[in-house]
Image (cartoon, rainbow, N blue to C red; front, side):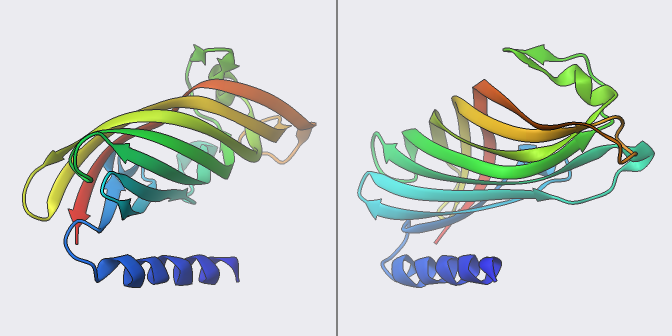
Length: 195
């Protein structure tokens, strides 16, 4: 039921803003997420000459070999202020993010800004997260309807999760753990099509 509401909302935004002319609506895909077998899609609508609203989402529900888990979904709405014209050049952004995840069985030795991701080698974590951040980006004009967009963002996320003994088993070790994360919250290389 909820997904039908979001589809209707996106369709309404397209109808509302799409009829005003070129560079009022853009659709995009983040190739960095695509490289991790995560489906990514976004829509951006112009609000004013230097303002736009970007809503992107990512989804991965695939089962990987050897009990590895990288399942998640993420929704990230963002308000952008363009320093020159909308959809070209530099922009500053303020974003929110939220979603759910089920990660485990991924060999690594990453311990970054107080977050020990090396535990993903031997354990599985399942939970939700929410937060906010700021970003900076640049849109390169490739043609009349095509852009390449780069963006990086930092911020905060709060997560609540359960810990499982291993990626493939269902034995819960801890429940309702939480973590406060500060660090990178967005990294995007988007291919953009402008209407």
